[in-house]
Image (cartoon, rainbow, N blue to C red; front, side):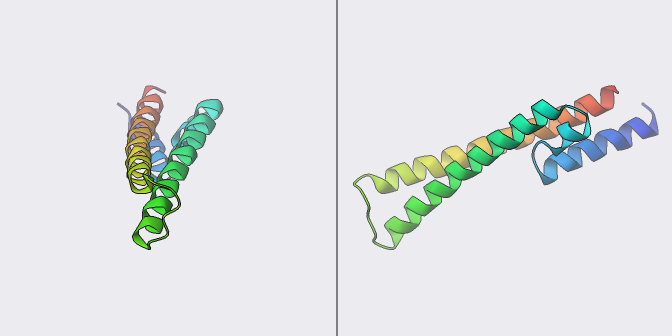
Length: 100
C-alpha cells in the first residue's frame, strides 16, 4: 500500500473518531456521512434524556413511576448505540479511503 493511501485512510479514520460521519464526508460519501451524523445525534439525544430522567430521580423530582428504569434503559441504549455507530463510522471510513 502506498504512503499516500495510508495517510488518507488514517485521516478519514481520525475524522470519524473526532465526529462520527466526518470520515465519510471526507471520502465523498455525503449521504452516508449525513445519515451517520443524524443517527449519532439521535443516539446522543437518547443518552441525554436518560441522564436527565436519572438526574431528576436522584434529586427526588419523580415525574412518573418507573422513571429510574426508563432513565437507565435510555441511558444505556444511547451509550451502546453511540459506541456501535462510532466504531462502524471509523472502520467504514478507513476501509473506503484505503481502497481508493
